Image (tube, rainbow, N blue to C red; front, side, top):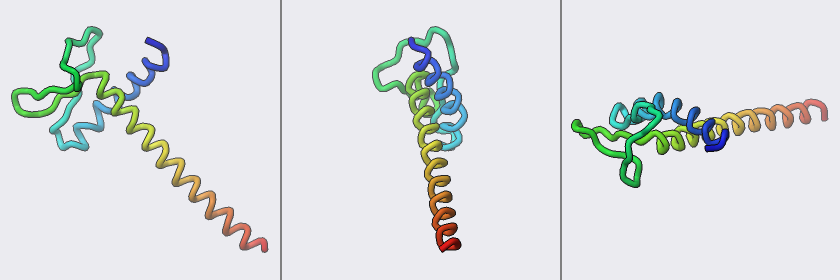
Length: 95
């Protein structure tokens, strides 16, 4: 696995492990990190005995990384908009 892939899995897994149970009100959780994950069926999730959904490490890592990208895009959009309006007001003050 490449270093980039390991970085995605490390960051994404950590984010998903914290955020997914919070957003789903405890109905979705991520499997415990292990060096040798057991094989799962294709979608990357299963239900436990209580009916909660357990996500596989790799699937959760990509979901968590996607959440990080969305937050980063939101931050960029807010700052870009703020800077745009600040420049517009500055131009109006100077003119």
